[in-house]
Amino acid sequence: MQVFEKKSALIHCLSLLKGKNKQVGFVPTMGALHKGHQSLVLKSIENNDITVVSIFVNPTQFNNVDDLKKYPKTLKKDLELLENSGCDIVFIPSVEEIYAKTVVSKIYSFDGIENQMEGKFRKGHFDGVATIVQTLFEIIEPTNAYFGEKDFQQLQIVKKLVEKEELPTKVIGCPIYREKDGLAMSSRNIRLSNEQRLEVPLIYKTLKKAIEFAKTKSIKDIYDFVQNEFDASSLKLEYFTIAEESTLKEVSEINFNEKNRAFIAVNVGQIRLIDNLSL
Image 1 (spheres, helix red, strand yellow):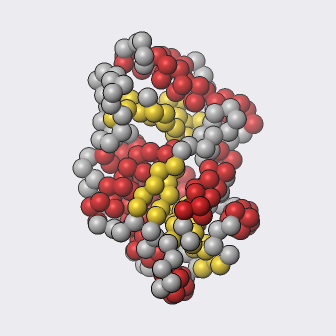
Image 2: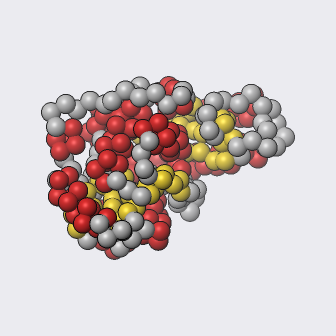
Image 3: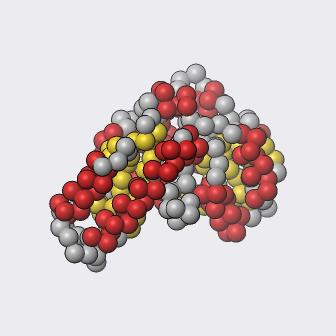
């Protein structure tokens, strides 16, 4: 496994491989890797000749400076996991290497999907996401790129980015990887206290019940149920919504002939967790 910190060296290495018609798979990450990330890497290895993983905590997608400071960093363990998984290349650039002297995002328009859900609560977040993804795609020029469906809105944003910027990369969404109790795997989970870890399975449990209720109850009844579940706990519900998958706009009624999905964001003390389930 080769590790690069400079984009010029990475570009040179990849140009030699692409000259041999090698298909490149790419998994962008912010580190603190877990089995969910590993599942993306293994999918890339399965479908490509070369797999590249980036580890970069992108400052422009954090609207909360404290969250950026506390974002977990486990580089040694990350590199061990990637090597054991069979990853070929890891890119671990500095902020200066990516942004030079100006750490700012580009401004994008994604036909309104950036204004839904996460966009309402994290101003500028998706401009930051799109900026780093486009930058990494232009450096690596991957054939295929893999993103987890836990960040479903991000996945849709990246697909829209590729379409609008006409980038020659296929974006592939991969299923959410969960703990045995249903909690969606997230790098932020390692910040949970033992007590909080016992409480957070409520997120998935409530999502599952909401999906079941969708067959028989009204939208209002489902929303009230979700709110009541969290009101009775120490977890704080930031939002719950049932939305159409492509536009991410909230639906006014359930139609099982359309692709709808339930989305949730919850604050556990200072830790923010998200999840979603398809209807």
